[in-house]
Length: 258
Length: 262
Image (cartoon, rainbow over all chains, first blue to last red; front, side, top):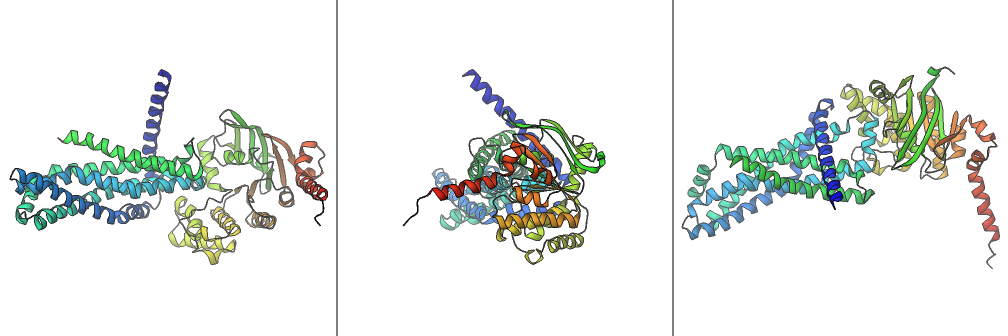
């Protein structure tokens, strides 16, 4: 029992150290990567543009639900005028960075982990190394930089569409005055809220992209399965760990801002 | 021969996995500008040997020397990497890039050549391998033989001095096996690189190689010319060399024992 706890602890410490080294090497490899802007642009497209419809749909419906639920709670206290405050602060501080990150993990992160896993399995990563190409610099570093741009941008889009969704359900469907709604939004959101939103989004971007990259890159380390199953297992782990990390990091960052 | 006559020297190389020794002190010397083939049964460590040389796997002990400099030295390793190409058993082509992009990749990422020059050189490499008409095709839409040629085009585009071939004929039928070995011989003579090939295809390898070695149970059991290998009467060598013929004979015997169906 004690031995098992010790071995598990050592395993966690080893994996954490290995992951940290991996991230450090990936960022350091930026200086060795040629034609980086082109790779970053492509990564921005793959992470950002491809995920736009999902972010838009989830953003609008999150706003709609917030408007609907918020109206019925606030109307009990005769405070329907605060609907804009509730929707905007919920979105900016928590829901937009967290939900946008989870959507991006589900769509772009899983695809990235699977792609790297297949590249590992078919020796494409080994081929890069034998060519003298830094595989981390070529495959991972552009994605990390793109994540720093895409996650905050997607969170901002989520906020805008969420606010519009809130207005749609609160003002158009439930009768809250539109001017009251938008002026409450304007009064409620401060610079520090936006800073929190973008900091969270950028942190989630780097963390989840690193986790997905690490899992896919080391798909061959999976001892319980091999081949296609190893790729699917590493992709599943990438999505699960990334999602959990988003929620843990959200709590940690929020505790610094409150 | 002088030391400098050898492109590559391997001394006492050992490598194991989870306590199982795969290479048990392998030593060989690859003459410059030759086709050197390492033969051996499947699972005897040929690919592991090549991956240790190609710097994909780290050996447990022993030395790999490139032009007199051990590859443990980072500068020598970097130099070796620039002057060596590796052809993987499964080709390891980038399936999301076209044939032209595959060939251009090493030039784009390891040289400071301009876009036009990279395009010219990549197209020339494809042309030399008779693949120019398929420049816009993705590897998944090429036949096995074409993929092999594309992998070779990618390997030669950087004008390497050494090309490592890992089981280049794995999974191919006899006709294609012959075609691949002919291709290796043809382009090795044209581009004058040193070719180190690992395979278990004895007749084809003997036909094109300048030197052969037999790797058996993690050790080099023979090293010499194809003629010496073909003439050797040593039991271990003869057993492996004549295994194809022995299989043919035993199959013929089984067939002759079957009762005739009326």
